[in-house]
Image 1 (cartoon, helix red, strand yellow):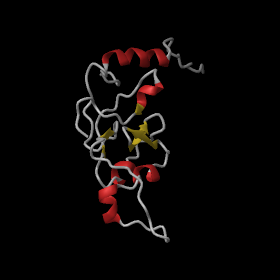
Image 2 (tube, rainbow, N blue to C red):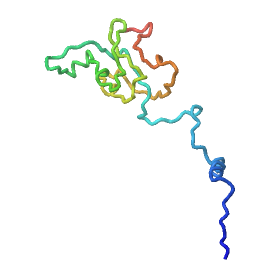
Image 3 (cartoon, rainbow, N blue to C red):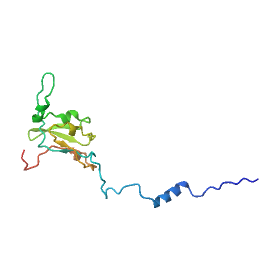
Image 4 (cartoon, rainbow, N blue to C red):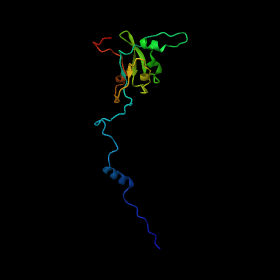
Length: 149
């Protein structure tokens, strides 16, 4: 008895799969031509309101405890203390000390947003931060000309 040999297809399985994808819906999105809808809790660029923040020096007792109610008036640099990536530093602007946020270092954990007692740092849905200039991602606290302090 002669055994029947199974004939293999001459068409490669990879080729079959490639051709089948010509007739299916694309797996990719049309971004940036079609903007994606983001969830409400998506984490984007931080928004800093310089007038809301008052990051001046404050005193603490011998036991290094700070009164939360006292922080409301004078602030406490909580954003600097709580940032795990050390992306926030205090700089002087027009004689006042303000936080400067470096988005190159930021991990977008939003701990600064949660910690700020004056809500000077807020979240936004701006997520397109790609740039060739690293300096463009440093949020410098500058007063706008003509704005009252």
